[in-house]
Image (cartoon, rainbow, N blue to C red):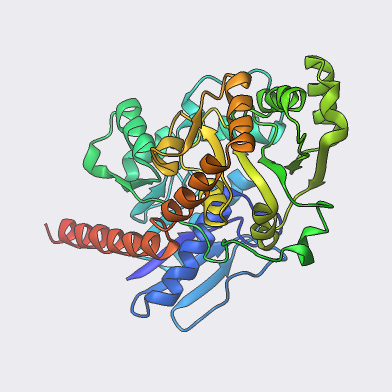
Amino acid sequence: MRIGIEAQRIFRKNKHGMDYVVLQEIIELQKMDHHNEYFVFVAPGDDHCVEDSHNVHVVEVGGNIYPLWEQVSLPKAVREVGVDILHCTSNTAPIGCGTPLILTLHDIIFLEPRDKRNRSLYQNMGWLYRRLVVPRVLNKCRRIITVSEFERNNIVNRLGLPRKRVAMIYNGYNDWFRPMDDPDCVFAKYMSERGYLFFLGNTDPKKNTERTLIAYSKYLERSAMKRKLLMADLDRSYLDDIIVRNHIENIRDHIVMPGYIVNTDLPYVYSGAFAFLYTSLRESFGIPLLEAMACGTPVVTSNTSSMPEVAGPKAILTNPESADDICSELLRLETDETFYQQQVQMGLQRARLFSWKSTAEQLLNLYHTVWDEVKNSEVK
């Protein structure tokens, strides 16, 4: 097979969720499959994290505006290279591409009501683009891949697709996420001492940042320890708005905001944390859950969407709409050492059920299945 993989954003320095998923899939496929030929279509960038090998070829495709890149530049490059199947990995695909398509649809949040509080132009434009494109490409796709049973059921029920056309393949996590006994070499860049709380959020309302900070305010009022809260990838003005709006001035001096944390530093940051807060309203999977658990850090997460499926039945599953519930679980971890250690061990064991190698193996099997179907349909 000549397999095309769309990986538009993987060369950018500040990668996010979907970028890491396709990057790790490519790395594992490059390790395990020396028979098929791969063409990885990327936009130019500074972080050349995938290199050519004898059967993996990186194809840089120019164009800064994502819709034009995907709808015009990508199909042109695919035709020039000539691939048998094209895997588009980030929720959307070219509408006019004649190559047999596989689409990874991480979620269908774009079909759900948009929170009017979200003022991010980037996120709102992405939401609109998906609403316009996804319905037009679904029937062109030989398979839809998603990343949890929760999301698979959601896609089948909301979009009316045959279940056999929607494959579920879990994400994994990098094997460098493990307990770090001596994180001080990296640690000092972010915190002065260990034992803090760690939260990964952003301005998207589904990340539940505001309610999590209200919970943290309640925690500070009731805790004897009053642990600091490390918040990545947020700016100070956004935090100030939340503090003023909710009258939670008591959190201001306890928040540490270092900005973007590079992925290679995260194992140290997780390992130095007392607990990790992953209190989203909705997630299609939640790789940070696995990363934190693999580092031996207890996780406080939500009882909604895919998070119970990924974290497991013994995880700390809170009502994300209840600041009191989130606060109570933090205090329980702080005051019950037996419970804390049980969560450490449970997380370490749970994380071992997931790997990028398993993800890539299932993906390769799917490529073969789709290619066999394409060849059979051509014979008929």
